[in-house]
Image (cartoon, rainbow, N blue to C red):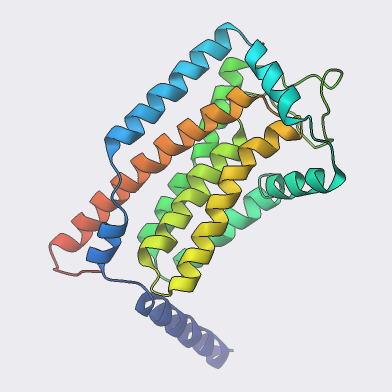
Amino acid sequence: MADLIEHASDVADEAARRAHRAVVPGRVQRRRGRFFLLASAIALVGYLSLMVVVRANKSLQADVAATMRIQRTQHPMLVRAMSAVSWFGFRPQSLILPATAIAGAWLLRFRTEALFLIAAWGASFLSFTTKLFVQRPRPDGELFRVVEANIRDSSFPSGHTLHYVAFWGFFSYLIFTKVRNGVVRWVTTGFIATMAALVGPSRVYLGHHWLTDVLASYLLGLAYLLGLVTVYRWVRSWLHADNGQDG
């Protein structure tokens, strides 16, 4: 048993060494990841403005018109494609996939990154609390086509959209700024960016959200992501300032 444990530890050590060798130097990471708190603040103001408007008037004619227009095209393949885009945001996969990413980063000894991924996952709590505050009804199945799904909370904002932008956006940032292999870097970030761009329209097309729900989540997700990236860069610079490391 002791030999087995020692072998497992050696395998984990080697995996961690390989993972860190695949990471670009810190100066390259910082050059690739130049975001600004000003952009985060602007996005946050936009989100708060939408929240005020929606809470004052939970049924907006512009939302009704947008939903009818987006749902105008009816095709089984399109329904399946939009359902596939939204699939990652439903339970249990919305819990299993982020937990796997965090555990993987921790086991590969990217401990700071794992902690910030946990913080990125915390954006979902903002969605939960905002839903309780706004209490906006979802689209009415009598007026629109609503694809059946296990949904029990209110509509504003879109938890799917916020999760994709905040958590997977930060995961994509880490991949893009750290990984040496260009194919892995671009394929991963390209896939995540595509899913994040499509998840908002998919939520409206499936009849689960209003357009302003997803627009608000894009703004909040962007504000959260940019703010988190800025703090992460500060922390990384502080951690390596004293010992002169460039990792």
